Length: 143
Image (cartoon, rainbow, N blue to C red):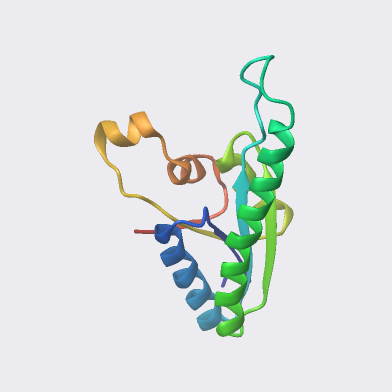
């Protein structure tokens, strides 16, 4: 069965449900958890952008990621499930999730989905759909 479950989170309430489900599954099957959150790198939109914007963005992303991952770590600790946390930076969050899963030897990815259908899913895109499409590792989607 699964030994290392990657739980992808963006810190949202919806993702918190997937965190709880992933940790609960890990506890049930005696697996460990690797939690990941992915930040997109800073992009310069114009040459006259305010000096220091990149540093402020990067530091803010690190603080947000740390808080997001601390929440997962606390959930895992409360359930006595071993947990490693990773803050990845990738232009494409779905790719960052898959890359971390591969690098850490994860055999299941758990993540949330907003459950959008039809044109909303196409127009808004979905990191979950992209992970499902591109991952060779099984994916458990929590609604």
